[in-house]
Length: 112
Image (cartoon, rainbow, N blue to C red):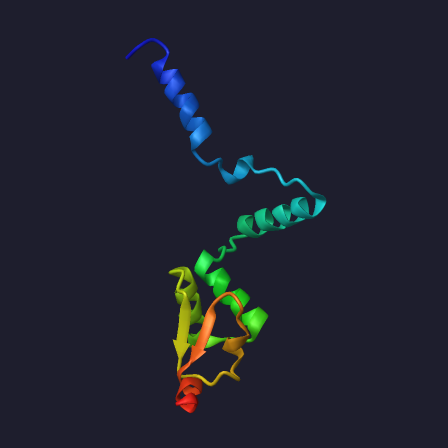
């Protein structure tokens, strides 16, 4: 290997690879407080939610959607679906979601 090639490669890797969570430094007092709470929870053995689990919890809290509806909607969002078609009536809580176009087959049947 040419002289300095290994050191240069290691330098590039340090730049390109994501930094570990121990390198993270919050920029605001609120960010600092939240980071400390997160670190304490992890140290006490708390398991963090996956991205999908977090989306499910947010859907439940924001829109009052629970159970299988949440799982189906989060799955549709995870694959960047353009539309979610359901047999539920358009008066159900799932129709409060604004991030995904919701279509009710029941409503379409009434139009025919």
